[in-house]
Amino acid sequence: MISAGTVRFLRHSCFTCVTVVAAFSSLPLVNAQSQAPKLQNTPGHLQPLQPTDPNVLHPAAQNNSLLSMEGGQRLMSEASSAVSSRNYTLAAKKLQEAREVFNQLSNFYQELGNSFSGIDNRIADSQRQKALQAAQLRDDATYQLALVHRANNQPELAVPLLVQIIRSQNPTRDLGKKAYQQLFELGFVDSPYPKPGSAQLTPPTSPTSSTK
Image (cartoon, rainbow, N blue to C red; front, side, top):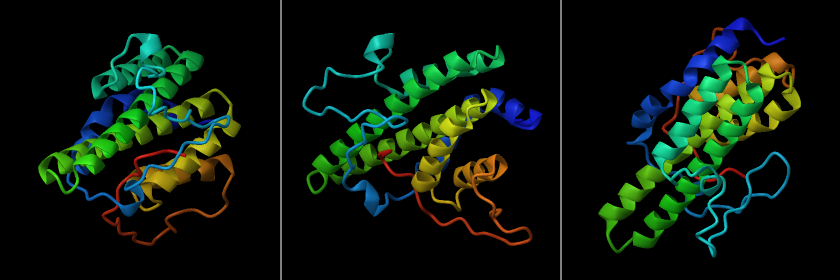
């Protein structure tokens, strides 16, 4: 059974994702972001981006939402309201849509940053910072989605999402630690991290732009 503390955290943490963005705005991009890998078209994964058809903006076009930070945050807010009413099916749908919006934004901003690299570094750096912000919001939405699956007694859906977060964030970052703790509580891993009584330093890494 999921703990009452986890459910309470799930209800309120969707509203805090915007404040996390500022903490990452000054972080450098990692090398893995230089080329966004193709997304796998398998169950539990995001659909591949269609760069040749910019009109295909799922799920944003389906929900009359703009492909923007505000559009993704609106979906997060709707998910939070659904969680409050224990409508986990609707919450999962909104969070999945939000993470897809943020992932597309991250990819697009990264592509723009790469396009202006060596031409106008000011624009290139600005777009890469936006890519980082969108990637962080995507990972926040992914974590919320994993918690919803736990609350809905679907741990088999939560585990792949938690592993994606750890791969994107790095196990030593706060969100990576939280994701690993969820895996530990689910019994998917049997070793706690960090080790009790040990001090872990958080390296200056950043989330990857694309989720595989």
